[in-house]
Length: 292
Ligand code: IPE
Ligand code: IPE
Ligand code: MG
Ligand code: MG
Ligand code: MG
Image (cartoon, rainbow, N blue to C red; front, side, top):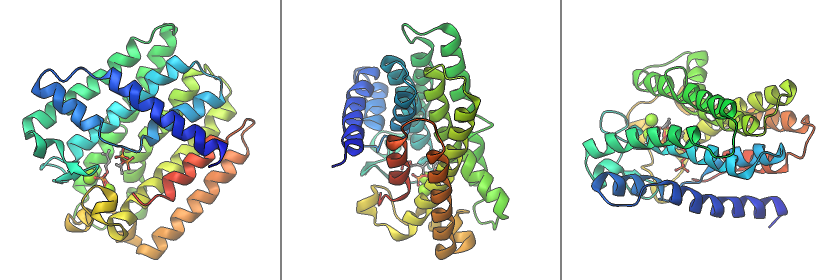
């Protein structure tokens, strides 16, 4: 295993204990369901992005921990709601029954609500961090998660079922529903490090946009090419719901080509950064060369 791969593995294991401690004890149906929906084997790519960028820019570890927790809580909330009958209506997530199946729909809605609130509570209460930094983090995450970002993308995704979108609307859909949160990870890393270098911030922003798009194209390809066992979520869910995806609009070959092109451009962007971007590069690779 390379040093970078070892480091990512360590960070992921470390993050598991951080997020475990951030969640309330399982003392009620709601808190049991919250733990069930978060501590269930996610790849933790978003927290790792926060760490990789923040560490490269010498941010304080304890601030990065909270940013990583917050972004994963938002992601987990989005998955719980994404699987609800009113949205993708899926029964399996991360290899286990989805929250509304294991508990019930009302609980799943409330779990999402509570995870979202907890994310902002964690950021607002970071110890040993200037108030302006905390406010900037809250604002960056709120903007990415809300009606200009992830939620807008989820809305567009649902409205686009059974439709042939034009290419730029499809790209916007992907960038909002998935890319916005990836971009927020990099923003949180730079804010935690109090980095004011606009060139670095801009390059990381463009890199994350490429990666977010590539990640969602890969997700859509896996829906066709993966297996339910491997994915831990139902294969063919997009086809069943006539989702607007890259492979559906362009075909599998063209979608793969787009993915390769984005990956190449992303690597070129990283190469132009004035610091060691090995961890970011490895993460970028994992985001597009994964099989689940
Ligand atoms: C799945 O994200 C949802 C999308 C945005 C496509 P991940 O593939 O990162 O899911 P987990 O966190 O590893 O389960
Ligand atoms: C989910 O996209 C994006 C968010 C939850 C914001 P998908 O619907 O493609 O995710 P999966 O395939 O169910 O993981
Ligand atoms: Mg969906
Ligand atoms: Mg889904
Ligand atoms: Mg999907």
